[in-house]
Length: 106
Length: 116
Image 1 (cartoon, chains in turn brown, orange):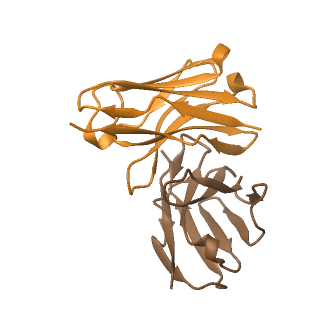
Image 2: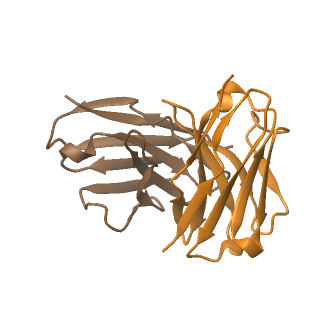
C-alpha cells in the first residue's frame, strides 16, 4: 500500500494567515490525490480532487498542488469557518489517508 | 446528484455480527469500485474494504481480513459489509465511498458500537 505522511499534525494560525499542509507519499502515483475538511460529528467534506481540481462550491482561497510524491493544500487567507481537521487521501491504488492536520486558532 | 445512503449500524456485543448496507444513486453503480472507510472516535480515516465493479475481487485491511466481507448487488445499486467476530476496536463510523468521474463521494456514515 502507498503510505501517506501528512504534516504538520497540528497548526496554530490566525484569521487572515496563509497556511500550507503537506502530504508525502511512500511512492509516486498519478494525479488521484484528494483533500478533505472535517468538523466534529460530520462526514469529511471534499475540497480538492485530482490534486488541484476545486470541488464545486468550495471557496477559491483553497488550492491544491503537487506531483509524484509531494502534495500540498494551501489556504490563502484563513477564515473563521476554516478551523477544522484536514486529511489528504490517495485514491490511485487501494486508498490510504494521511493522519490529519488540526488547524487551531492561535 | 450522487447519493450514498448507509444503514444498519447499531450496538453489538464483542464477538457479535452486524451487516451494514449502502444504497447508491445518481451514477452507474455497476461501473465503479466501491470502498468502506471507517473512523474510530477521535481517530483518523481508514480504508476497510474495497470491491471491484463486478464483485470479482475484494481487498481488505489486515485488521479485518477473515472477519469482514464486502459484497455488492449491482441490480439493487447496493453495497454491503458483513462484520463478524466484532471487537471493541471495530467501534467506528462506517462510510460508504466511491470515486465517480474522478471525485470521491461519501455517504453520511453509520455508527457501529461494539461494547458489552
